[in-house]
Image 1: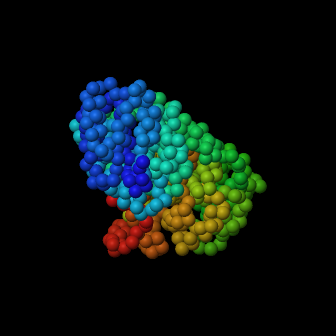
Image 2: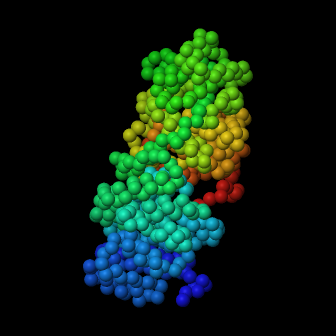
Length: 561
């Protein structure tokens, strides 16, 4: 009988069925090359028919660290993996396919992370792909824990390491999910794990052979449907009301419907400016309010207009458009966007508040239903839509923070899928532009609203940091669209003092690589990653000088290369 002291740290779990001999040999070499030595390898041969494979497995089993299980009949990957799980004794399970490779330091790195936090029940790493000639490609730089993205894409995949006791408690892999059995397990484990960690290093090389899903997602169509059902059941378990469908890019689209429709207060600061939109000169706030009334389908909307320098004729038009939905809030102080929003929130009555620029226009009728539905998850602090330029290109798909904040995908076409489908997937972001974003009132109040030390730029960046410090998730969704005729109502330039305030307030976090969109600047090479706001050269130099001064100072708690 195995004593607690004899339990290995890791059980590497590998179901085998007729791999190439060379692929299996490379896989075995990668296991035996591990720098970490406290492991066992549990292999289940699912009735392989190739004699050379069976002989090689017998040879591998001569090593006392290898446990070989043989099935008399082929039961599929779920049955074979569960047989291996039943024989595993390790504290943690590391899942390895029969022709894939671990990097030599994989288990060492995982062990180091686990040793820092005893609450971690699940770890995943970055991965890349390897072809039969040994060439590496397609590095997948994954986000920090991103549950919303996981519902659209099994981004965790390889290398996944899970606490064995939790996997056993959940019953291991479930039959009926062949091809997406790992996706289903990750979803179930994530619902119960005390802590989840991401290691931003490639620890796993995924074999890209003819007929494999690594090479072609359509190679196993049954796996796509199994993944859709896995997400559908996950949403039912966690109480999210949504429909799940397969996209053209072979990811999943989760379309939410709110279970309740609390009042939404749209907070629109304006000075009554005019601008040219699609060749016409328009009063921006009038155009914005008209589009809300004409296109929004949400049943309970309050429109709070915080105004200065607006003439009575314009106010009369807004009253005619909005009727008793309109709340007028005069503002007679120097321009301060943050102060205007805070005042509008104080005068509003909705449970959901939506700061909304006057230079926006509704594009998708169900936009508010989508945003409100996301806020039904209590750990979501803020959610925002896809914002479009007048010509239909993307204006903002959330914020990307690296050497200062930027708009994700600014200038990209709306049909651009982005690296690994990024622009088609609702997912966590480091921040959102307050041209349009939705929050629950109690969350807005909890973090103190907008900081009025940021009258023009970076108030949304500051708000995002406050939300993250309070352990809220920030979600961007492509399932709601608005036009944003950016900066037609005010000067878009930033002042160096605003950037200085941001760095003084939040330190090195403003200049580190973005944890939800790592290496995005490299992955989207050639795409138009627009600046958050036009930054003059002297400001850009100040960012670099400030960043260099921070080297060696403590940064945010994270797992890094």
